[in-house]
Length: 318
Image (cartoon, rainbow, N blue to C red; front, side, top):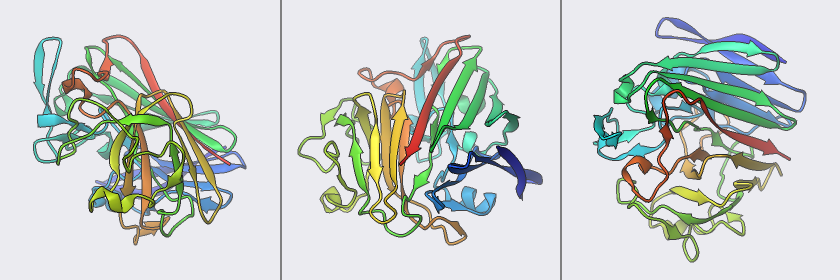
């Protein structure tokens, strides 16, 4: 069942919340920013979130949003495609982060209920934030048992870049600390970065580092070894189940599956004093590796003109 209710008014327009409920799990998505506002599993809201669009935007945390056109960072806000150099929107110093100043996270979507699915769509014009091609984009949300499946589809009239993601902040206890949540990440390697989180252009083994989650460990187990920083790293997925997370208090288990080659683990989060779900969480953002278009050894998030392409993620709960 999918229901529609008024959520907020932003920039003079009504924002609606679409609630998907199959009796096992319940999810709420807004038609501004494609925000995954809440996700209830066994009566527990496992997401950090806000009760107003202004709070989402002003937090600058990308909390719960649909990210596009390209997730994560593009160095110097420049790339070359088809022999042509493009200059794109800078919103983190000289870096383009999560699509630029006005990425998909700050757009109104058209919403359509198709049976038990919610389909959000928008058209990103040629030159939008500097990216080439008129891109037709959809984000489809569907409940499957005790899980939510999100499918992102892009179709462009010119060669372009395409790497959308879900920026949900999870707290499987429904609030409070997340450091005792156990993560198991199916990745032997990660992409090391410089001080502004731009990849160095190669991969390194997680073995012997605080990034080794292969056997499963608490988020906080090696946190002190990060040298005062937080987890904000791209893991190079091995294939199969990407991540398993187990809450220490609620007992909820989450499994993450994706057809994208990497996943960004970020631990922290926005203050949710004006919202729900607790103040801190962890993100598991499926993606092409950051700055891939500028790294010869990385797979580029290349979308060929006229070829409809889909990527997705499924979050399953036990």
